[in-house]
Image (cartoon, rainbow, N blue to C red; front, side, top):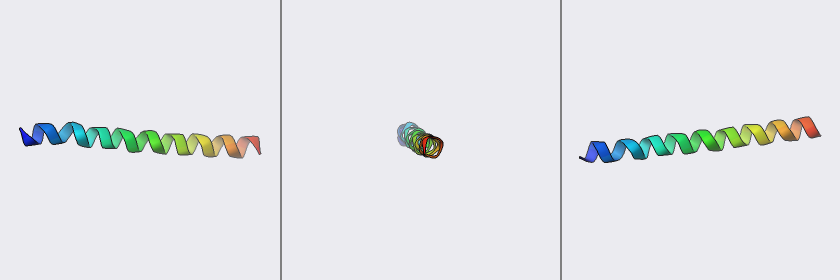
Length: 35
């Protein structure tokens, strides 16, 4: 049961980090293109 509960949490953390990374990259691209 513990392994089953831990897996979704790791997936959520991975997705969260990926979304943060994507937003940083997108904002960086917007800043470089607009300036």
